[in-house]
Image 1 (tube, rainbow over the protein chains, first blue to last red):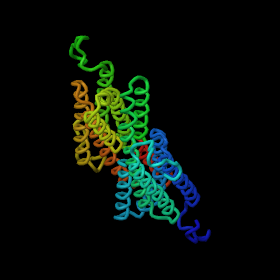
Image 2 (image 1 turned 90 degrees about the vertical axis):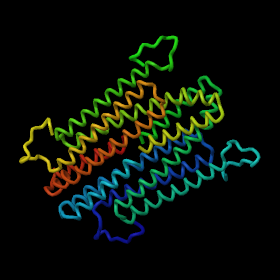
Image 3 (image 1 turned 180 degrees about the horizontal axis):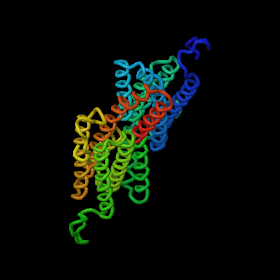
Image 4 (image 1 turned 90 degrees about the horizontal axis):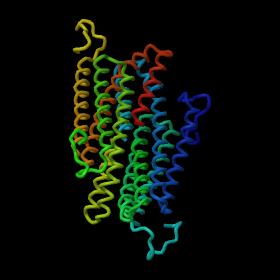
Length: 104
Length: 104
Length: 104
Length: 104
């Protein structure tokens, strides 16, 4: 990515293609937020704005669920193999993040 | 607002101050989306990204709940006074929007 | 009450058939809760228990959305017609209930 | 537990005290469902019923989050240590269950 000069020969993470996909999804999400701003500015009918907010919330949830799945697959599995307090802490972190998602 | 040439003497809606507040909140939400894009781009720790997504989702929910309250106060109350099929349709629209929010 | 003999000339609410349906749905929900209790007692695989909890949560949400729709159709519309502080209070109550549903 | 004749010398799971706590919580949840049934039967004010439904939904979510945390700590960590397709399958199952919770 533009801001972090990584050479192709030294990837710090193994899922760069997913990263591009996430970046594209966030670009779309940013555009959706801009669209909702415009709808409010133009006095669009309230129910239509709410429909767009629900769509944006779903898009964000799907990004969160994807990131969480990646996190379980990589960080949590690695920590579980290493064992000890590192594993416990990673599970606790993941459970707390899941609780925030479920309750938000 | 910039895009809709309304003179101060002829507001089409009675809640212009709220509108400014909503526009400011949407600007912040757009900034939050941009921040999450940057976090992904910079390989920020996944759990920290999830925390920001939960915060953004909550911010969006609060905007939606505010808009819905305005909608009930103005459109639904006006339609209820007018009565007939217009009232029925507005209630159905509102209930459908609430269902989408609860399920999203 | 469905179970108490009401004369047709003194209905306290206009939606008695819906009430029977809600009572049947709540009976089913109570049965689902009992089923989850039994699954935990019998050491059922955790993921299968979670599936049943998600189903129960969805059933509850649908009951809530139905009750809310009835409430908007009857109480809120009646209060809107009457106008004044009664209408305002009913809308505020409804908005607060919607917020609790969206956030729960 | 009463219904499963396990001898103390052969526990199949290591978290029996948690199990008693979950069973007690499910008993309470069943009672809450019965209470909502009674409220509907007695024509309790709709908003008060909605408040109880939100409370019940939150109680269920907390049980689900607790079970999921236990599941990550035990099943997923064990599978991660074992590695291979078993680990992959457990993570997929857990991610799917989390998605159902977030979306329900």
